[in-house]
Length: 319
Picture 1 (cartoon, rainbow, N blue to C red):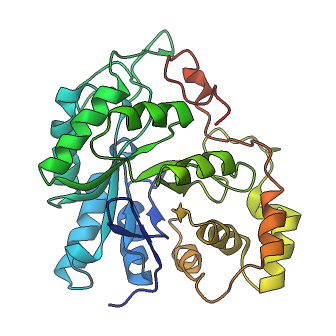
Picture 2 (spheres, rainbow, N blue to C red):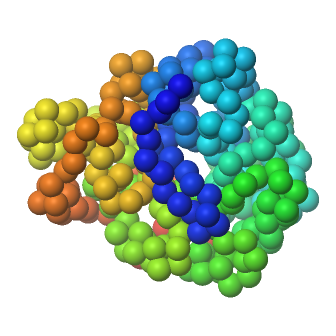
């Protein structure tokens, strides 16, 4: 089945769909159906992570679509992420193989270090946020050593590309100073209230593509307050959407695509999953992109500020 999609080219020559399907916060009982709907709608890039606790269900959806002949494995581009409790190099291959087993596939197209921060190390079945007296416990892992273990996963053909997520400029420079395999992407929160232009410019100089998560402002984040601003209801975004006869979500997705960023919106609602992919028949005028850029106010919503005590907490620096 053909799919409308545009591709970016990573620094290793691998092509990757610029529009992907996010699975964070997609609950068990919902995510399997959502992934099947997404594949039927034309998505070929599925963004996963072990900590989302739903990779087994996603694996069932993938297997069904392979068995039905809707797609072949090589048609899909599947990303997952190494969680913070597994930064010790000895864990990396074991944890990756658990993800592959859950997803029922033989390799990942892209594997990311989920955060630069190392939590207290634990086995796969242990808690994601090891705490003492309500405070997350720091581990002994170093993201530089973790990166060197990630490179071995490429050598073993368990992953095609490797990258990072939530890394700041200094942390990226640390990785580049030792890398024999360069990160292809840095996946970060990115939307008009936090447009990451400085980080995008820096990464572009290093031939690293930004991937925008929470491109709709993560309205369903568990800690959202009733009076927090909503991107999808922002009158200026709504006005631009009306101009193009599109939804606010479609405008926010197209904005990132036209900036050259990979973008991974998430939904479990069939109509929205389909609508979020229906962005190929219009182009935002430069004046509208400039206006959307002006909304930037460093409005980060996924700050994990309860981990500010970690030495590798990434958001102390300017970008």
